[in-house]
Image (cartoon, rainbow, N blue to C red; front, top):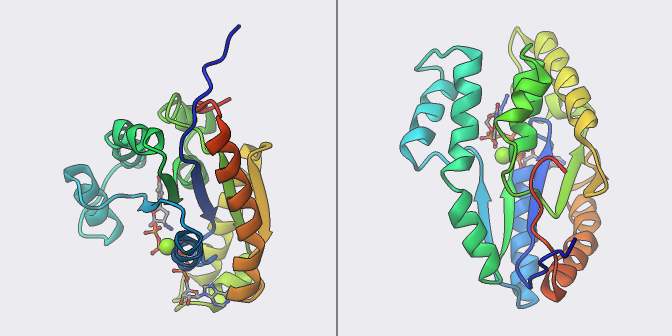
Length: 212
Ligand code: Z5A
Ligand code: MG
């Protein structure tokens, strides 16, 4: 079978539990790569700017209640509506740094009790990440980074379940980074992997689909 290989930007995804530092690291990595002359766009999911994104946003801010399966499908639809734009940006040679992606979609919904396979199906055939930078944090450490209320222990338990589903999705594209370290140490650990995958996508790499 002949595989179509093309020169393109890399799809790099940052994943991890709540408060693992994804958004901060994404910003820092984007500036680092731009200083090296790379063409980079920072994306995030949920993308709250679309009509679907606004429904997700009301759900997250607790102004709207939604069935677990319905909100799962909205999160997935929010990625599907960006699929062609994602692909054309990559094909134009721009690297995408994406703050949360399908892996969050599956891990969070499965942790709520939905069937793992059912959750994966709605992500099937979306572009697969060339590199997943997984910010691995102890949920107890993450909890100390923010305000925790009465439901603290419940929340840490939920995060532990999310972590087990993330673990089930690991493959060779994942790089596990110890996110209990300082902001600077974590950033240092991300740079080499990002530079290297951008280089190999520039030389030509097939854009794969979830789930390989
Ligand atoms: N969700 C879903 O269910 N299904 C889906 O398909 C998707 C998402 C895409 C909203 O996500 C929720 O949606 C999320 C999953 C679900 N929720 N839950 N539960 P979001 O991405 O919008 O969530 P967020 O508000 O950005 O929070 P976050 O992503 O969890 O945080 P973070 O981006 O990982 O961390 P941060 O904002 O960079 O840092 C958090 C704080 O820690 C901040 O005060 C930093 O200064 C501090 N920090 C960061 N790094 C360090 C280090 N190394 N040391 C000390 N302190 C640090
Ligand atoms: Mg964030």
